[in-house]
Image (cartoon, rainbow, N blue to C red; front, side, top):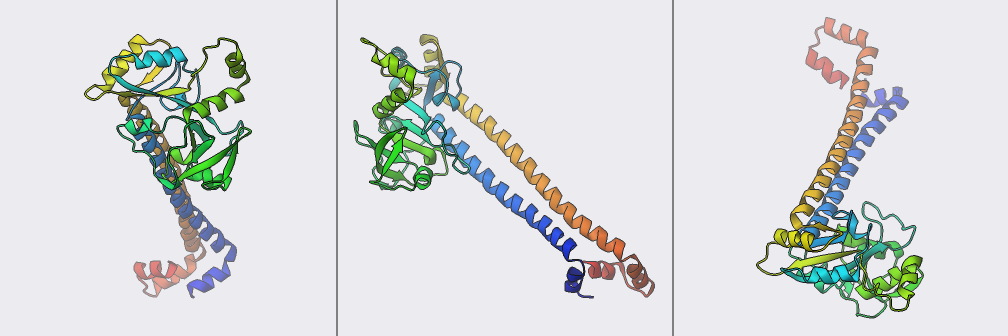
Length: 318
């Protein structure tokens, strides 16, 4: 009796078994790809965060503090620059592209990233992203933006096209090469432009900024602090904590610990899911073999009686 005859004799069972195995294999492949993607995303964030001292509003963390929580005032930004050992303070404005941002596959939701891109070249661990087309640095004071690869793909725009962000139209000055990390989801723009867009999109900030004599601006959601050559970044971070109140200060060592812990949790979840998929596929194969043995007990017995060896019986079943 040929294997094809067995398949035709039990088409539903054979199809379900094949589907179970295919689902298990597909799940393993997809989970492996997801693990690689998330690993690169976290590692990219780790390189960025460990090349600077990240400062944000009190009560926030290494990564979430750049987009949530308290804002940094003009006085706090000035105080950061006065701390001994600090070479440069680059204020950062980060917020979602829209109030209901679209979800990009296996990465962050689109975010506005307002910063002086030239200042980020001082990051000790993370090199500036490379452009696929156009320019890396938008013209200061202009309505130009640089898009990450996934944002450009999602909005179907390229260099010299226009894109609307929170009701305002911007010209695309450049598109970055894929990095498989956070910048793929960023809309880079000059700090002043992002700050203005944040104030215009938040009614409370807009009212505060319009008060005569207001000293609200500049304002930031976070700041990247770069230490001077020869300084210990952990010592500089400790000085910032001592001299400037109401801040969350994440040193390179703190950032590495937080992100490594997140990576361990992600990998544990993915490995657990992969093991479940493997068990499901194994059960499908085991069930098929068990059913085949139960259905052919008499045939197996007859073959053993006439002299068939165990190896021959197993080969016939398989």
